[in-house]
Image (cartoon, rainbow, N blue to C red):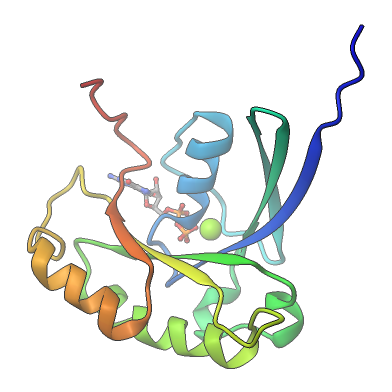
Length: 166
Ligand code: GDP
Ligand code: MG
C-alpha cells in the first residue's frame, strides 16, 4: 500500500476545579462514554488518553485528572509542567465553585506558560447543566467573564445526560 506519513501530536491537558464539580466524570464521559454516580476520590494523578484522527494527523490528548488534591485549592508547578491547555470546571448549582474558578486560573497562570511566554489556552466548563442553569444562563455575562479572566471560551456541559442530536 501507500506509505502514510501521519503527523503525530501529544498534548497534555489539565482538568482542574473544586472537589465534586465533575472533573473525573467529564473525563470518563469524553474518553469512555460512561457515567457513574460514584467515582472514588483517589489520591494521586490519573490520566486518560483520547485519540483523535484528523485527516493525516493523529492527536493524542492526555487528560490529567487531579484526583483528590483539589481540596488544597492549588497544584504544584511540577504537575502543571508542559501542559498546553486546561479545562477549568465549576458546578452550576454551587456558586462557591464558580468563585473558585478565578483562583484556579491564577494558580495555573502563575505556574505554567507556553514557550513564548503566553498563558496556556484555558476553557471554562459550566458542568451539571442537567440540574439547572442558575449560574450559566446569562451567556453575555459568561462571555464577559471569559474576556476579563483570560478564558478562550466557555461551554455548558453535563457528564450525566447525553446531548440531544440536533
Ligand atoms: P470531581 O471531584 O470534580 O472529580 O467530581 P466527580 O466526577 O467525582 O463528580 C462528583 C459527583 O457529581 C458524582 O456523584 C458525579 O456522579 C456527579 N456528577 C458529575 N458530573 C455530573 C453532571 O454533569 N450531572 C450530574 N447530575 N451529576 C454529575
Ligand atoms: Mg475526581
